[in-house]
Amino acid sequence: MLSFAARNALKPNVCRAFAASARQVRGIQTASLPPLPYAYDALEPHISGEIMKLHHQKHHQTYVNGLNAAEEAYSKTTSVKEQIALQAAIKFNGGGHINHSLFWKNLAPANEDGGKLVDGPLKQAIERDFGSVEALKKQFNATTAAIQGSGWGWLGFNSGNKKLEVVTTSNQDPLISHVPIIGVDIWEHAFYLQYKNVKPDYLNAIWNVINFKEAEKRLVEASK
Image (cartoon, rainbow, N blue to C red; front, side, top):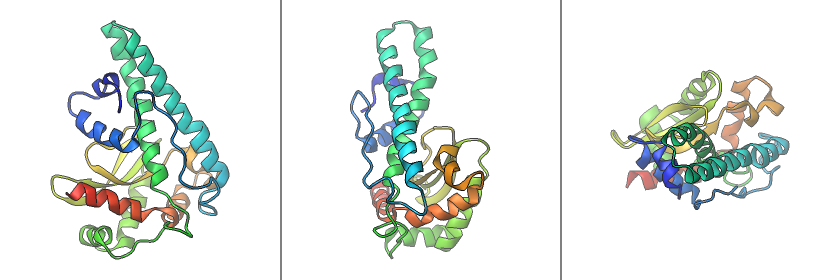
């Protein structure tokens, strides 16, 4: 659970959605780096072991450290001015922690569940809302590749119209307008060592290791 400071940093409209995402992280007052559910090289050749190790041990760990430091500083100050100044760090690092904790579960080795979408609620919803799985991938990749700078591409569930939609967020902002079903990190640290600046190649490759079984669980839960 995120602290009062983390929740307060995202008031007034996003606390509920942020808290829902935070429950998926299953953290406690002090954030910690979750272990990967597979080996660092398990996603090769689509994502290299070097990228996964750096991404997890260095980048995600940095967000965890930053969040804990900001939370600690927030808890020790009674200055409203200082609390306001710390909210940006809490939002950025808290979002980075939430997004990456979801991202690791969003992936699976290709020789296991990665890239395998069987007939079921998720496939049916994709075909209903996009026409086909290939149409979804095409729209998702084009929309995500068009992000200027750093951010995330998402397949999200719109609780209002009960449809799947492709949306993006900037920097490490967590997805709050939709329930996250599939999220793809488009920061350079997620792909540059392997794909250089060719984002489309990375986006095409990552579908081979998307954990559709995990995504379907999220959709079923969101649809209740």
